[in-house]
Image (cartoon, rainbow, N blue to C red; front, side, top):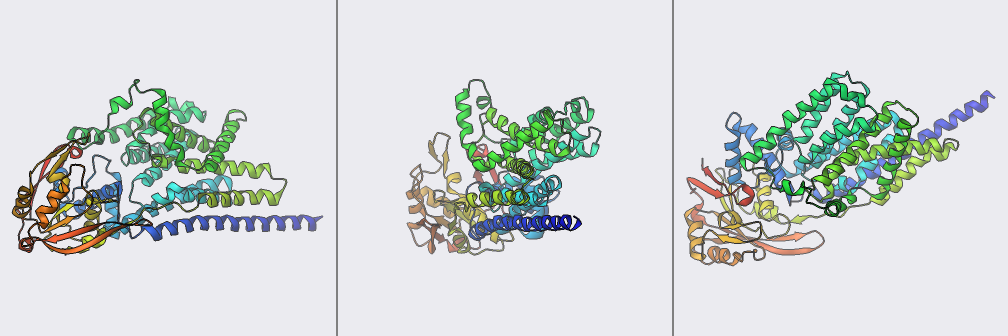
Length: 562
């Protein structure tokens, strides 16, 4: 009899080890998906909102390095004249502060910024693994991390310069701390932890204000309503508001804040159909398989707490995680600020946690068939990673070569850029590449759509300078050293005027380079043409004034060349 028992134990031990190895292989497969994304994106130019996030981070880095102690608003305005892609105010400052501290060690380059996002994704995956493994075992912990990393939104976000993953990290930490507090309302450590991480999340991205309804919903769903009688619960909630709200109020007061019609989108006049329609694209934030697994996990947690009086911390954590998902959807239902699925990035780790619970439930259900029970998490993990697959990726090349075609001067160069309509980031991609490869950050880059045009929200154009001669005179008097041209005609039809002003007389501006702009898999779109005015190599304007346009609050900023 003892020999039979020993054989069963040895067999069970072998099955567990083999299944743990299988779970590890699933995680490695998820990581392989990331290596494929990194190979495509790591050395590519930035486009869209990534440009603003990178530029803002470099600005804060420069402030820590050279401007600490000076007026931060004046420093930001000077920087915005020189590299007009700063977005602090439009978005909160936490992501940029963390970027800046990281840059002190890694350097302010596009590649290092992408690696910071990858580190954030990895850290969040580790936290998810630790929590799942603590309650569901090592194998399921590995599968939950693999599920998270394989999620298409995470695959791309881990190699983009965006704040979504950092928001997700802070939200997950806040979920963890609130779960601890609901287990012990006398824990000041948990209350402080929630206040710290909730504040950090809200100061990273405005959508994290969903932590407000979350903090009210979580005790109800987890049947821990006695926390409403705790002074700590309300006091630390007020602390979060007191620490987070001033930035948003100040940004709106200064005209830097997010330009949204809040009164309209939050009003009862917005129909139920319209709100549901605005939420429709968000269903793409996670695959159906993951949503199905998380729904099973939620059902199991509700049954355990509400019908079986399961008081375990695992059930509390599961219900608190579910409360965040519900709270974020409710928040976006009433304040549909965006329809991009990535706004739900902070819900992916909680969804993966609930999926881990459903895997544990399935393993328990199959406990009489040891091999099947052990293999079920591996099978689900393989199915999920295989169905997630390789995500489509956008890559634009040419901007780095265009930036490098203009020598980096010790005292900087005055550059005029009129490539806004090119695919990818246009002017913004050029600005990011100059910042990434110039350690001194001394350039001043004038954007044609700022200094020559003003376009309102309805697309109506107003020219600041009329005619070829006026534009040419402006460029020579500044004096502009490099003029960067290209792209299709802008909506105002002003591009031909700019082209003639620069290229009309080769006695002043000389063509020094042409660089093709190419999209991965699509081929060449257009040529960037770079002209140099040799007479401006040693000359700089004493003052540069730049109208920042409607997006910049219609301000006119000044920079005095040092």
